Amino acid sequence: MEAITRQTIEETAVLVGSKSVTLAGQDLRDIEDLSKINLEGANLSESRLDKVNLEGAKLKGAKFDSAHLRKTSLKEADLQETNFYRADLRDADFSDCLLQKTYLGSANLQGAVLVRANLTEANLHFADLRGADLSEAIIFGINLNGARYNEKTRWPDKLVPELVGAIFERK
Image (spheres, helix red, strand yellow):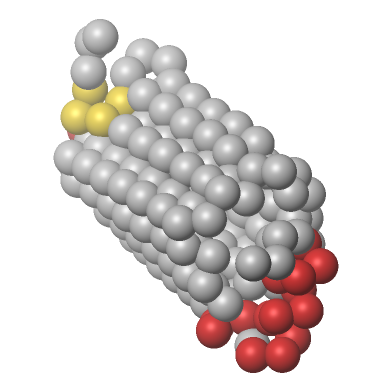
């Protein structure tokens, strides 16, 4: 089997279209730099992308169910309508990301940075937001039912998280 590299991923995406690319279950941590890559609609479920640079990547509609993206930089990435169900996103950086209609249900976002992210109509029900920074995020229509947060979680100005279903945890 040929080694998976950025080049092989991009060449395959050109041949078959990014929606047909499946990297499900693959360990991609050795690639390190996938910035600005176009993998719209690709399947990356259960993949390992910890510490990989995905800044400015085009990932609209991609699937990251149960994927590992700890300490991954996704700054300015297009993640609209992307699925992160039960993904490990601890300490990931989503600054200035497009996350409209993205599904982050039951995702672990402890310590994640979502500063100035557009989370319009995003679904974060039962997500773990302890220590996450959502300051200046756009949150119109967001679903926070059952999302957990703590005293270290930073919210957009004037938001009262309990009024939108989020649950405060003292620990």
